[in-house]
Image 1 (cartoon, one colour):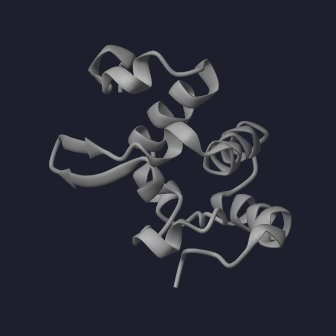
Image 2 (cartoon, rainbow, N blue to C red; image 1 turned 180 degrees about the vertical axis):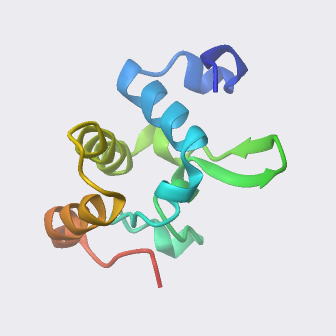
Length: 110
């Protein structure tokens, strides 16, 4: 998704945050399978995807602002982006995320 179609808060966020929002919006099938470990399961998030997108109806996306202020969410997404660029599978990326971030708390994927 082009940056100019993102919410204003995302457009003025640091580049790594902008990239994370854009990647997540473009890769829902991957990101819905990646957990988050920041504790956001307590606010109803069910994957790292939900840290960025609260609702998608066809082409209409309602963005969640949570990841704007959460470095763990963004770090997880940046790691997934890097791992996929390196040729890792989504399953390998998930295993890496679980191994690396589980020290922060429980996964938000039930």
